[in-house]
Amino acid sequence: EVQLFESGGGLVQPGGSLRLSCAASGFTFSTYAMTWVRQAPGKGLEWVSAISGSGHKTYYADSVKGRFTISRDNSKNTLYLQMNSLRAEDTAIYYCAKEQNGDYVGSWFDPWGQGTLVTVSS
Amino acid sequence: DIQMTQSPSSVSASVGDRVTITCRASQGITNWLAWYQQKPGKAPKLLIYAASSLQSGVPSRFTGSGSGTDFTLTVSSLQPEDFATYYCQQANSFPVTFGQGTKLEIK
Image 1 (cartoon, each protein chain N blue to C red):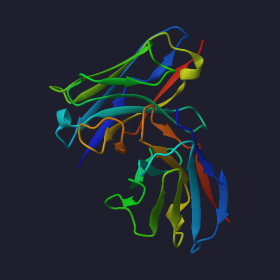
Image 2 (image 1 turned 60 degrees about the horizontal axis):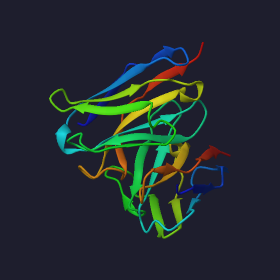
Image 3 (image 1 turned 120 degrees about the horizontal axis):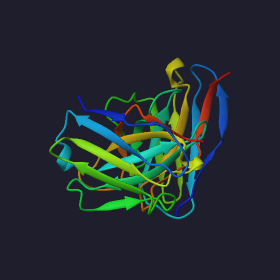
Image 4 (image 1 turned 30 degrees about the horizontal axis):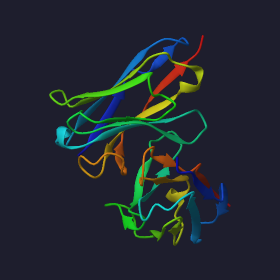
């Protein structure tokens, strides 16, 4: 069974940093692109970032470009999202998700982790 | 960016009803469209991909159709567990974008 488990969320002050992790199991991690999607409280879904299976190709939403960095450690089956210069508008539940189409980046996502809450507030 | 617009934003229906949700893309996306279901406090779940392909394990009462700019998700006979929020998502080009969601409520 494919499982994804996010961790690393919490309360951080504006301008601060946080690193999210997503531990994957149940599939050959290195052969699948992965993505991060966030959801602000009571709002819809917003794609944040994606990465190819090798980690060589990365993609970002304009809203986080230059502040967030996606990476992965295929030896640890773990996906990361380093978030710097955090703003109040980054407050959201952050989900990691597996791309359905192997190493193709930017298709559809299944499954999703349970999410981790990031709150940016002073 | 490609804008995805869902309608209606919310709909009330009864168990056994047939419900259709529409999603319109601001430009053509061929069949690069997915539908997700999200229940309160839970992660989204993929229902339909490539506009009309049913994800494994999803009941056949869910059907997707459309191509180009106009798409629909139909639930043929609503079950109690289907009351949730539904999102469409385009995968034609980056950035991937989602519709604003349609909340399906019990009448």
